Length: 399
Image 1 (cartoon, rainbow, N blue to C red):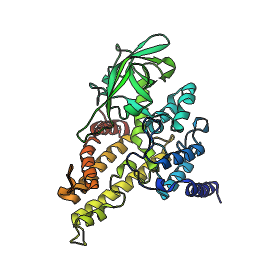
Image 2 (spheres, one colour):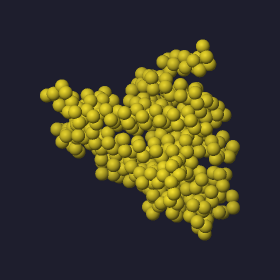
Image 3 (tube, helix red, strand yellow):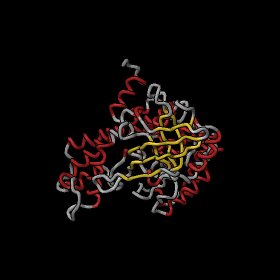
Image 4 (cartoon, one colour):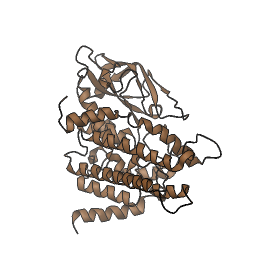
């Protein structure tokens, strides 16, 4: 038996013994663990699963052991993902700590920053949020105006960020600030880390049409940030910011999720699209040919997306590809919207109910998700931005 075969066998046995039954089902809203204690999972098994995976270093399996990982190489990592998917296991830990700022600190953080921040992230002790967009700086992010003024051993930060997902539940924020207003806009930005409990930090949730929202506006009034939490170099934060976005856009963290497609899978866990269609058209055993073609095409796109992500891991010198991650972001956004449009087509008028006894909870939930998903092609960088990145950085086309 080869070393990789032995690793697979040992991994399979351990997962079978240690993954709780309720963690082998599709994720239920509110049961996920994203770090910290300000928003707790409603399922106690989630913390048992987290504890066991932390002990193995498998919340961040490719990170070095010194920072809470298991130090797995690519082949071992893909085997672990395959075995997690085989039993339908939920990710033990999500959030921006493990998927965004953690991998970025591995590349750009000082040794002190790695030791202080990565271990708590790997153990799920802290939740993080992202301070990028501002009311006047969204797609043109480099126009941001939140200022950090040098005060010797620290900065004073003033300004505001918007669409800071989960800011009201976060313990720390990674934040882009302007440290030099007198140079070209991409050159005067720095990348800071600071506690959301710092004096001068306030958050205001943004309530959407559906009555709730993960989004906040976050305000900074003379927030004191020690210089030891400046990541990389002053005025060169744009370099760090771009790399972090590549981690976000890659979607590689979703490969370990129970549905094998992470956020691509937005459907009732007990029903495939074809079964869903039959449940709404009980008079016929045969699916409409056009609908059948749509379902097959969506399934092919999902499978191709997953395989491309896995190939990207295998081909990349690091665990996250470069500018090609914009392809993942663009394709995923279009897929999710198209899949939800197909579900709406299947449900007909039952798919557009907002409330009332004539609609099931599932119909109301999916109808609201259909509306919410319209923003997917904007969040994390609009589709137009992704296409520009693909054209310039991947295909090498001229401006």
